[in-house]
Image 1 (cartoon, helix red, strand yellow):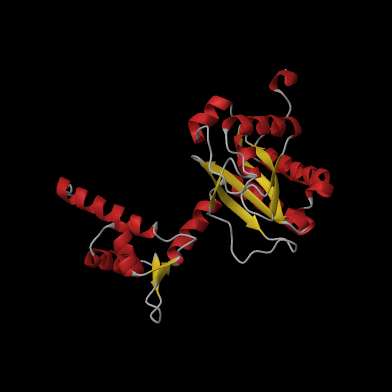
Image 2 (tube, helix red, strand yellow):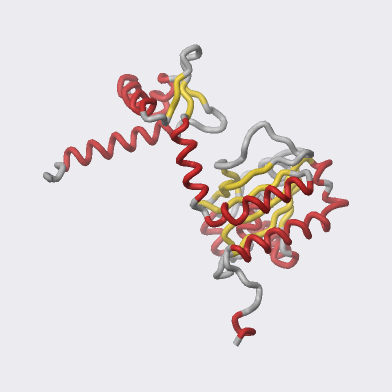
Amino acid sequence: MPRPSTREVGGGTQSVERALSLLQAFTAESPERRISELAQLSGLGQSTVSRLVGTLEALGFVTHDERSGLYRLGPTVVGLAGVALNQSPVHRQARSLAQELAGELGLGANVAERHGDALFYLCHFEGRLAPRAYTMIGSKGPLHATAMGKALLSDLGADDIEALIGAAYPAYTPRTVRDLRALTAELDEVRTRGYATEVEELAFGRACLAAPLRDRSGRVVAALSVSGPLSAVDLPNRQDELALKVIERADQISTGLGYSAVSPMLTR
């Protein structure tokens, strides 16, 4: 079979990059787009965008609403997301336990990994006291302003944290941690008690409690949390109860991932 020319490979790669950039233009904030918007965002000509979107539509990556003229992500994306989630060891181990936790406590139960300098939601289950009209799966969040983010950072030193997210951070509310010194002080507390908390640091009226999940090596690979409105989470009165429940489930998930709290030195 003849090998493709450099020109063909380069052209094919460019088309793939352009098509993927169009898919990335669909976000939680803007889940529907017009061709004109996609052209403006991508910097591509409208005819090029129309051709690429036509191919994406034929393959099921986007769908078109004839009445509004808007495009949205299609079923092929959902199918690929399902494949990716089902291949995640953390998702497989955590899913049922997080669902049970949401049902037991009536709060939202979430599982997230760290992807680069942000957390990435793998699981999200609603509780009767913390309903949402949308799923958190696939969305991202800041590490410094969330209980899950602090749990994910809890096995890193100050130098590693600074290299990862810097030493000064954006404030989402007046209660957001804004610098490395304050963050590392909070992480010392997380390591001591085994869980992290967040009270109106990312959004007003919300609270969260999270514990780290560890793999066979003992490294923190994900975090489990419960969250909801301040009145439902009620940390002033329920913190010990919630911490016990979350840590218990986190330990079960970590055990499923191969983690053992027993030091190898003790088994010799």
